[in-house]
Image (cartoon, rainbow, N blue to C red; front, top):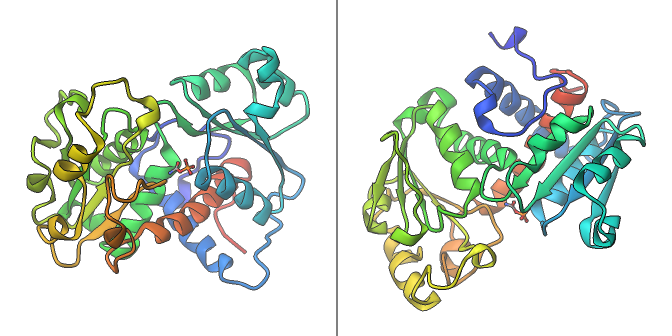
Length: 316
Ligand code: CP
């Protein structure tokens, strides 16, 4: 099946736009690229002559630097535009920024923005490939792909993801990662459990995931526990009584982690608030896959750039 599958020329806006075969293609390509990343010379010529612009209107460490390195390791020319030092601060509109960058003969734009829908808007306004690097609370597709790759590598083959209980705990309301993760895990049939304070829990109407009031019920016997960052910057006053109370009732510490399977993976998209949603010892425990997630993020982003910009499936 994978032989005919392609995402060449496609925008990457949300996981819902991709089927399971396309996701398998991205992950298999990322696995091949992980081997390249172990070489002493990591650079490939696949995207030589291509130009990629990172447009980040929100802070980022992992996504921005990994997309930048991903493009460079594939031989492309990459620049990163920081909104705070761009003409946006002089009042330039998003449309004008996009059209200006497009006029410089770029092949792809990687966009992060605090408002939902900006990457979709970009895909309508300009021709280069658009990759959503996180838009508001809506979607973070490359994070979902790297999370699935991490689970696939450390827990189960893709065709056995349907045997896993995956718990997602914390600030679901503000989490584009939770929405994209749920989307991708559903495609592979995982048993998804979520828990959050009622004020941080959006409505999930379709009944395909199990919603818990108590974090312990979500974690119990889980194979994977994904902890979400408490997004204080998106939060209105009063959504949580206090950070102390949140940590006491919803934080993942070593005691709570014992409820999960003994070999359960702990994941977190980062950046972590140590001592708030995750304890320092759990963050750095043997069960933590957090640094593996970052490494997989680089490979997944290389795969996305390679497959969308060149259509190549075989890594040299
Ligand atoms: N997970 C994630 O998106 O991290 P950054 O905000 O550092 O990119």
